[in-house]
Each structure stands twice: as C-alpha cells, then as structure tokens.
Image (cartoon, rainbow, N blue to C red):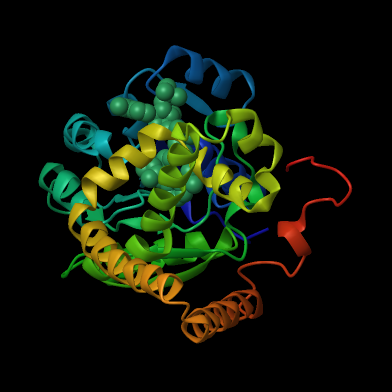
Length: 311
Ligand code: NAP
C-alpha cells in the first residue's frame, strides 16, 4: 500500500480491460481518494456500478471529469478526438490528462488542441494487456513488472510527468520516458507488426481450400494456435492502432517484407547456413527476453501439458 494517495479524484473515460485494471490497481495500492468513471454504453456503466469497480459512474464525460486532478482516457484511439472535445472544457486547471493508447503521435494531435492552458497532457502507454476486452476482464496485477511508456510533448511540466511516473510505478510498472515518435517506431515492430502478422496468418489459413478448417484447428499446436491468441485481440482497438500509426507500421512492414524475401530465397536455393544462422540468432533474442523478465521459461508458453486448456 502506498502511504498517501497521489491524487484526490481520478476520472476514467472508458472502462474496459485497461480502465478497469487501473481502477483495481489504484484501489489495491490506495493511489487515489475517489475513482469516477464514464463509459459509452449503459451496459458497461451498469457492470462497473454493480460490481463496484469505481466509486461513482456517470453518463457523460464532462460529469466524470468535474473536479478530477487525474484524467485517464481508456477508450480505443479512434475515439480520442471526440472524447477530448467533449471533456476538454470541463477539466480543472492543473489537472493531469493522460491516456493508455497504443500509439502516441496521433493521440497528442487528437487531444492537445482541446485542452486549456494549465492542463497538463502527459500521454502514456502501459505495455501490458491480454486478448480479452471489457470491464470484467481487468485485474490489479496487469501492470506489475510491465513497462509503461510516457511520452510528454516538449515543454510538458516536469512535475506532472514525475507525478504520473510515481502513479505507474505504484501500480507495479517500470516507467520509461521517450519521444512520441520513437514510441511509435518501437511499438510498430514490437507490437503492431506482430499483431498484423498474426491477423494475416490466421486469415490465410482460414482461406486455404486445400486444408480443411477442422485440420487447421486439429493440428493448431504446430505453432498456429500461438498466432490465434494474438489474432483474437479486440478488432476495434487494433483497427484504430493501424489507422493511427500508419507511417511507422508501413516503414517496418517494408523492412519485414525485404527480410521475408531473403528467407524465401534461402529456402529456394537450399541455403541451410543462412536459415540456421537466423534461427540461432532469434533463439538468442528469446533468451534475452526471458532474462529480462518479460517472459517465463515455461515450455510451450506455460500451458499445462497433457491438456489443451488455455489460460
Ligand atoms: P476495451 O476493453 O474494449 O474497452 C474500451 C472502453 O472504451 C469501453 O469502456 C468502451 O465502452 C469504450 N469505447 C469504445 N469505443 C468508444 C467510443 N467510440 N467512444 C467512447 N468510448 C468508447 O479496450 P481496452 O483493451 O481496455 O483498450 C483501451 C485502450 O487501451 C486502447 O486505446 C488501447 O490501444 C489501449 N491498450 C490496450 C491494450 C490491450 O492489450 N488491450 C494494451 C495497452 C494499451 P463500452 O464498453 O461502453 O463499449
């Protein structure tokens, strides 16, 4: 438990996987005195209220942000501009506005113009998630030992950035500060392109006429099912990520395609040395990820063996 709450009143705009996890974590660690929230649908607002995930639930953004000193936008990125336009005029001077969006340059462009002078915009991205969505999928430990990247635009108040850094660290995250542009490039290769590859390979397999769908499912343990977990991620969220990080994703896809062509050539010309060299190098990268505590050593992604049960 932290000794003193960092904020008086936190307002969550959108309470899905990430928003509800922040609420649970903030409660667990005593980080805020009051959690207010709003969500687009009546259904979500009812779940959030009935399950007591937050202290007060409002129908509209302006009601939720009134008097808040920390506002976190937790909707899909495509909704940020409309949300900022709606809540901007109702935010108290001195408040910190942040978000959890998976892209950062587009988010600053969408939100900053709607905030008054004296309101501190410190965009953020917790690099933590699951393939599940909705207010019931959140849990307090989601951010523990995961990175949270903050991308304060030039000229951002340093005290606001430090306070938000303290908040994420209290939720268990490790915090890194980088420019929005650098964030978008790094995430394009570590997260966005891998998701696109997963969506694509699952789509390709589903379209194959020579292999029946039941065979794809039956023999999925051959590697395919690990892609299906990623390809089950929320369609709205990921549509918005690709539309809002176009430049970096296309740049990384260009590099990816070149490397894929080199692999194709190596297979065609029986260049086993080239294949072996690359596969050995990629194995080392996985080892480094395990050593850095970002993955466990458990075989087969920790699945219980002798059973096909997923987590
Ligand atoms: P989620 O579980 O689907 O929840 C999204 C929330 O936003 C829900 O409360 C939803 O309201 C609301 N919402 C959806 N569309 C909206 C719109 N057009 N206008 C207003 N509200 C809208 O999503 P999530 O996984 O928490 O993701 C939220 C954000 O976190 C995204 O920006 C995403 O890029 C980022 N993020 C996600 C992950 C991940 O792994 N999931 C990881 C890091 C960052 P209703 O429930 O009422 O529909």
